[in-house]
Length: 322
Image 1 (spheres, helix red, strand yellow):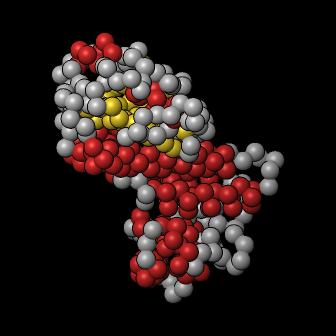
Image 2 (cartoon, rainbow, N blue to C red; image 1 turned 45 degrees about the vertical axis):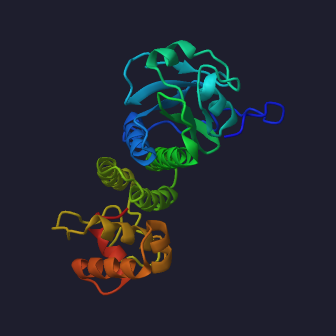
């Protein structure tokens, strides 16, 4: 890679937009970093990979694979200092063929790097919404350049990690909005709160499908169910939905045996309940329109009705939708 041009490159703030407060559903992001490092090691063919998250404006190195010592564990890297600090400040990958004598970076962290014995290093930022949330490194113990292929593979792992973090932060945002919708003050008319609950319930189910972590996806679905029950119990009076949903509403009878709908059938019905066409629901859920049609047909059959309109009403009557 070319040497950094300090006269033309303006440093950026590594933090970017402040992330939404974390929901109780969100696991420690360290697991996502470990997965990204395993992927980086596999894709780059480099044995030594490491990295960590950015917090309070600085990078903390916490995750390591293939290192021989603990010399860099817990190392705090600030913007503009060392290789990682350059990546933090300029929000782009950078590499050196021999770390210690390199003239394009500062040498605040030479001691732990020497003890580990690494020489050629490439680092890539994990960028989410315009801010660096972490840095991934790949390193060797000789001065052979890592090359464009290894750099591209490391950048791909960083992009995948950024996508996972972005999804988790969107979940945090939606969970908080859903909590706000459920916590409607008693003096406020119930209908707007119920409408918001329905909209956010559908979007949260759609977001769950984008999460690769199976445990997190299941926890998010269970949270949808809990918010659904909280919203139903929290809405006072008879606030049956508009548009002729006869028999449906937050206080409809739910003591009878409920049809067993699959998560995907409920996902589809959630968007149909918002007035989405099959094509629109498919776009939100990342499915083909024909697949959405098949799930809707199956849900309609299980609910014992003959139209999408009545399927939504029946699902609400059984307490399966808000």
